[in-house]
Image (cartoon, rainbow, N blue to C red):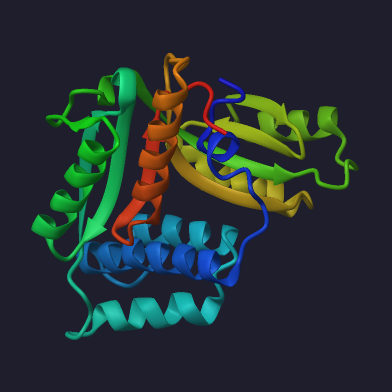
Amino acid sequence: MSGHSKWANIKHKKEKTDAQRAKVFTKIGKEITIAVKEGGGDPASNSKLRDLILKAKANNVPNDNIERTIKKAMGSTGENYEEVVYEGYGPAGIAVIVEATTDNRNRTAGNIRAYFSKYHGNMGQTGCVSYLFENKGLIVISNEDGDVDEDKLMETALEAGAEDFAAEGEVFEIYTVPEDLYDIQESLKEAGYEILSAEQTKIAQNYVTLDSEEEIKFMGLLIERLEDDDDVMNVYHNWENCD
């Protein structure tokens, strides 16, 4: 499982520009808006909202932003977003799943379809590739200074209920069942570890290597364009050698 996470493959660039950080805040805000409209604004009775608040804090979203988003979603002027999932194939049949939130399905679907088509892929039917992925929780711990005791962290994570553990350069990746993600995150935070991210993710069961320079180029561009789209929340794929 190690080495194949979304963090290691796509989000390994830890330096965040203000624009990138703002985009992260915006996307989590959309998720919170949906959760509030579905289950109310009280995290005590809305477990999805509670998990998203923890996710927002793990991604350094200020408390004021979180509270403002919840309050706005509870009012009549809040945006009406819905969650949509698209599946398809990149160059050479690479499996791709795109999770999005949108207030206009036609716009979002049209954009996603255009990206697939432009970069030598095609959008498929629901379920065409999702069976190739497993749902997991992923917690990323910083080890930028190299002072984290790997054995102690592994013991702490496993005792808290983690399923798997991997050292990946300047970070440690801890995998959980999705339902335990935020409880384990809180345990690690209380133990003093610096958490870079904590989120539910999809891990491919098998990975595919691209050999053609053209295929590598177009697959990289496809992922880049998808992730840059304001409606897209997450992109998952089974490309082995994505940088």
